[in-house]
Length: 206
Image (cartoon, rainbow, N blue to C red):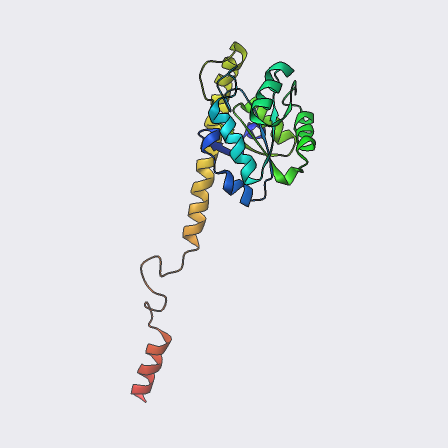
């Protein structure tokens, strides 16, 4: 029922993600939401955010900000961080995600999206067929319409975590069922005797 809203990954915050690992996996472009993904809602680019984008460029990433905000807000942030941007994106429309890839010069397999909202950020990325990471919002202060959506997000996240736990337990059970006898407490052959033991015993009898 809620699978269309499930993120590919769930992380604590944007700045704690291992971006070297993402680069090694073949990603070359990262699309970011702004508010509560990079900074608190409505806040300007912080020194931390500016240094962060500089580090991403050193790794080799292209970046693009994808926001439903209007141009003055988004352009100012983009200029401070040195990032490309798409404003008034109408997320979750897939058109904004496609425009962001075009701006970065990347294709779908090499692009990943990072944002803090399920029903706009993650759902839009999934509609576009794009890899995505959901991060926890930086600050609880948000616009009223977002606050209301957070209650619904909690329901989706509860189901997501439940399904993730079930999948993990299922994988562990399958792994245990395939373990050799040595893992379960005895070496193969000890129950009936090894082939070499049987050969030696036969020789003695003869």
